[in-house]
Length: 356
Ligand SMILES: [Zn+2]
Figure 1 (cartoon, rainbow, N blue to C red):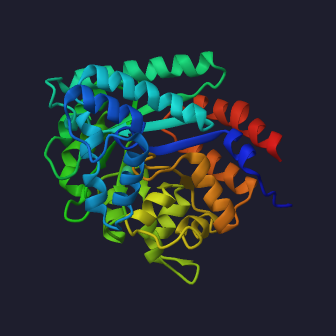
Figure 2 (cartoon, rainbow, N blue to C red; figure 1 turned 90 degrees about the vertical axis):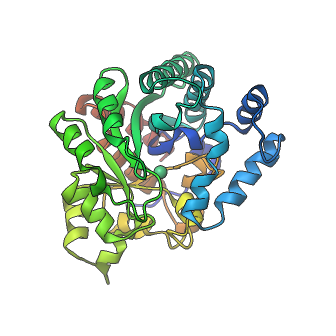
């Protein structure tokens, strides 16, 4: 097969699917500035461009804990119904502008209670904002479907309550669950109660694992907790020597466990050393079900188009490679099978065929 390289205008138009993107990591800088002014919240700067640069600089520190600390300012403006409606609607419009046709947005409702909203009111407001964004995007001729993952914070003790919330809202736009936050010192098995409940209720979930911590974290997420996908999972390479897969890496590849890889974010937190050397390329070539994701578009200063462009320019990716990770994402999305199949057949494959 002839490999096809691609220019940036074509990249933007390619249909994309993103499985790993945090709502509170993807706000528009101008919106953060505007909402913070209304609330009297002090930001590092009130200039949107400087604020965008401040995020990337803080995120470039190479430290996952400091990276996570930058969320203070986005979360500050997401404590009211108005703030949630607006940021959720803009979230969808920004994905549509990036060529995304299916996205899974994730956030932790437990971090949005400071303004007096209940957990359920937080989810209702976000779903309302997402629905408004989807309606506007469809009206503008750039339809995008967005499903929600609710995150429990792994260092706190509300994961079971969040799992209950995911069950309660499963017919109202919530498609799954995740645990997020600092990985080191907070193993997934601390939250077995939540995971066991989700499994009893047939709600799928992913777990952030193998980013700051290695193979034991990935093993526990899959084999003790029962995750269907892994957030990041870059450290699975520790179980691959000279192209030979160990038992855990073999399980991940052979059972088609999706790895939600986020190249720019992984560089910033020190989980990878360069785009050229990022494990996503080697894992793709070994036949793992890798997916390409943004993680936090504001905090990492990125978009899906940018992530694709980096892989094309620095790791030699082709349009066929981009199609592979897009189809991978839809195969492993937490949507019903018929809807995933329709997106692949009717939207993604024709979109890539037009570019090839
Ligand atoms: Zn993440």
